[in-house]
Image (cartoon, rainbow, N blue to C red; front, side):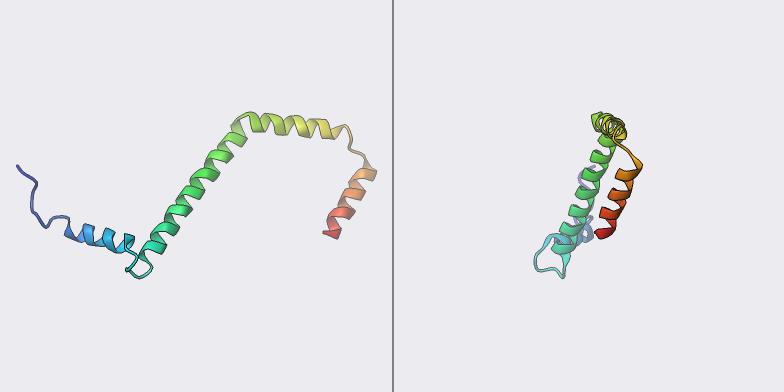
Length: 86
């Protein structure tokens, strides 16, 4: 069997051309916007995974443990007052 019907992918080809064409109404803008959203989501997921399972989580725990030795009620009050100031 050879190739099938010649007009088989005409609708799909037209759809892609409209999405990727600068002349199509918002076609290229929406396609690029969707691409950036997907890439941003992927980058965030990679960073979040590294943070929750990798060396970043270890460093965060170490920093938290080190900061606990400086915790006092006076420091907590001053920190809350500073935060309230914005």
